[in-house]
Length: 163
Image 1 (cartoon, one colour):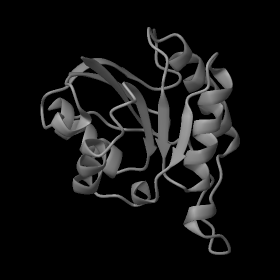
Image 2 (cartoon, helix red, strand yellow; image 1 turned 90 degrees about the vertical axis):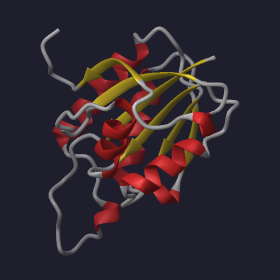
Image 3 (tube, rainbow, N blue to C red; image 1 turned 30 degrees about the vertical axis):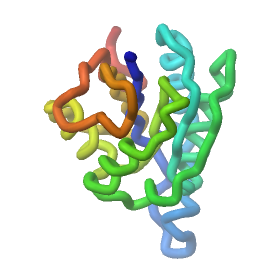
């Protein structure tokens, strides 16, 4: 069975402010635009997302909402507390615990965890700017069987890249 995984770094957030918790940082104006463009990109992919797992930080929720707003069929949105400030190892374990009923999944998270997971699964390294989306596929009956360097990279996208 082919499984699709989108690894997404949240869109650009407001600069940190000592009066506001990091957790509560929202998307900047540019980040809002990136989220809309990212949603349009995901809409044109040849599958429909079943689920989006996102960190409960405001900026990942807002990025996920922009994606959902662009889609014809809205995937299940699930906040996953362990994705906030997750290390690469926590991200690997998270993928292996994802619900097997979902074949086409997006994870919206933070750096460096999301880029560490991308490198582990794909065997590649790419800079992971805000709103970057890697599309990976796996031939696996279960997410529990997904491991390092087994992904086939279909695309690596960020809003504004030349087509």
